[in-house]
Amino acid sequence: MNTVVVHPRYLILPVSLMLSLPAESVRAEFGGNIAAGFSDNIARTDGNEISERVLAARVGGEATAQSPGSEGEVRWELGAITYSGETFDDEGLASLDGLARIDLVGNRVFWSFRDWLGRSSLDPFAPVTPASTEYVNYFSTGPRFLLPLSDHAAVDLSMDYGDVWYEEQQLDSSRASAQVGLRFALSARSSFGIYTADEEVDFDDGSLYPSYESYRTYLQYETQRRRSDARLALGSSRIRRAGVGSDSPTLEAAWVRQLSAYGSFTLEATKGFSDAGELLGQGGLGAGGITPEQFVVSSADPVDLTYFLAEFSVDRTRSSASIGYTFTRQEFESVEPVSDYEVPYWQVRYSRRFSPGLRVGLAGSYSEQELAAESRVDRERSVAINFSWDIGRDTIVDVELMRLSRTSSAQGSVFEENRVFVTLGHGAGLSRFESGL
Image: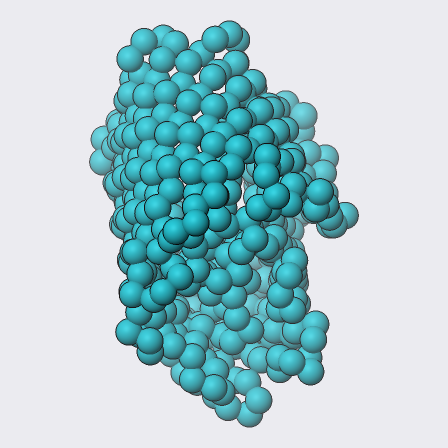
């Protein structure tokens, strides 16, 4: 069995979160599950399909903590998966997704942590299988200082150290960044600021990948209302690598609107420089993005990112539903030409409780991956239905049936797969199956 190595730093976030806040403000849940499944095309090939039985077990949970000025949330899972045949090796499973902000000095000095450990595709242009994924960890930490100049103005200074680790690829890197700005309170619920930021990224293997710097200058407006939150940042950014510079406008916009007691609407837009490690680390807690990790291209090159998200959701007592759309365009800043990459992605979910013990859910997704230089388009579709029965206090049995298919203009990237999983779970809800099985 392949072993998942857990670095000691992964314990920093949950331990610091639990120890820094009063005990009465901490809520924690723990759970576990065992899942047995079957796939009629485990290797996701076009012809010579291999059927496989799968058995997976997990423990995990989530914790939230909040006190005046400090807050945090962490989710984690550990487990193992085994295959009945010899197509893939048995392996360990692990995931961690957490963030925390700790108030060190009375709403003036904060320390933040952010950590994401998950799996990403080695090749987003190929079908996802256990052999084509790797673990990636994005970790960042640093202080933030809010130094008042008057009742309505303050200096906003933050520093951050980040580290990105890849299980297979030689793309490990570290980054140091600093940002300073002037922030003006327009009212009790809105503010305006002007900021400048500098970040340097260094790769562990400097002989393969040269370091680079990025600079940003932008204006920012934030407002919090009773039924909506909004943020808008506009400016310019610049990448400098190996003596070559590139410029791009910077845009970050986010709007969350509570339409009613049951419905909400979210809009997000991003334009500017980023990189693969940062894109992976920005998902999960505290982020609205719904694009799966396998669509992030692993590369040492900076990327000029265009991103858009629109999502509508309804959550009622017996039913819930959501529909979301994202568009991602990655344009690589490379010495050698690298093709632009586009991914429009749709996701729909619906769930209905028919009785106190039975809930039925439907889910579907559709994506188009376009590789411009090769005139290549890959289309992926998934449809799933699941039935969940409450069989005891905090104990459920879940049956999920899923069909996945992929068409492509490139040979070797087409497949159809049907799978079924039966899961017995207790306590906190955990993953029902691995997307890369």
